[in-house]
Image (cartoon, rainbow, N blue to C red):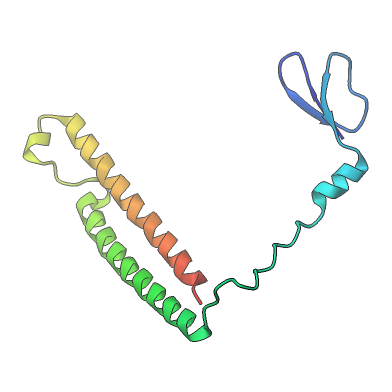
Length: 134
């Protein structure tokens, strides 16, 4: 398998001789391809003197972590509800200073939409993290 570049700068991969006008960048033979597809090396073992945490201590740490994540999730859900109320499905009531300036109103709608999206992403991330806790 070889990698070539043509006169326009396009990269071409091929395992047969290419048309003229292509400049060879690199080639892999079948042995190299096998090495690239091989399973990654195992991680090194933990050194003998490395500090260990007993199961009860780790379980306590995991419980604290789960509690903190649950509290953060509850807070984010509350903030999302407030943000959705403020956003009002993209049609909040214009503030007095926005009635004469449509651009300010659009800017505020954009900020409110971003706040809703941010809280939704935070909730998704927290739920994912909670799903990985033991």
